[in-house]
Length: 97
Length: 306
Image (cartoon, rainbow over all chains, first blue to last red; front, side, top):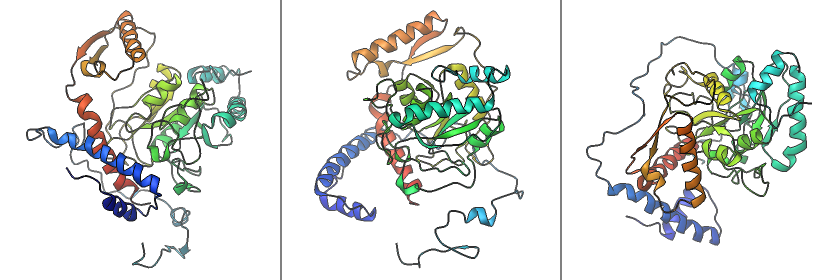
């Protein structure tokens, strides 16, 4: 079972755009490894006979009729837009993250 | 003088039906209680004005979207976000005439068991303000316990209704997955999240559950539920209760907790329930590891948008 190394932790923090102080890094390294240990416990079980479960109830392929219904107006839909351009959401140019 | 501390939702309805109290007076009584105690307890992130009408007031956990009312999920990321539609559970509450008192505090994005992880500060347990009310729905549980709401909606992914209800001395119901719509709530783990009632009595909880439960065409994981019968008395005759043996055998259980569970089992028996032992052999060792696989993985997907 892979352990979280300091390098991996820094890489994950970078992906999450989190800036961490040294004492946070030390604490998180410890905690993340504890969580990984708990998670790897599941691999102790032989699950070959257990069917995958996506819902505790017997629901398969829940369909709806394709009927138009009242929906949000353009003004409502754009109400929380930080920036808009006419009836469009205005977003940063592609390529930035 | 309305004693909001002790008033149940059912009693509030009685006051309104008998015209002993007007809708405006009832709502104002809760606003007054909130004004007095919420500066200390911090149950509420947003308090609403009386929308008018004669319905029973209700508090709503801030992960549940409310049209025109700020919804932060306890996070600064959603500071200033005002939904433009209601969650289905809120729509159903409004259809029953319920009036929203406000949005209650929660661990950020419902992740936590103490409400200490709210980005807006913790909520205090009304029974002892030096203690936590539990979480993530500590705001809803504390509000009901302190008489700052007759009942509330919370959400439960890994205990966030049950545990704060226990810590605040309320009745809380975490519904079976699929019986209550998740449309409009800020998702944590979509295969675990459920909205449910927090109240002072089992009858209030049952009634509020019947208001929100049932199939929703906006949430394809929901099903219809059988008609919910409000319990008339306190007898539990005909009820079968299973107590998983393994959950009571763990050496880490505090002695006081074990005694309380045994007293509860004895009380159920005295009230006529058929209480027997059942077995969940892998629950103690593997339940939490499974949760730590499913919940963070699903949270990672749901929160990637931020």
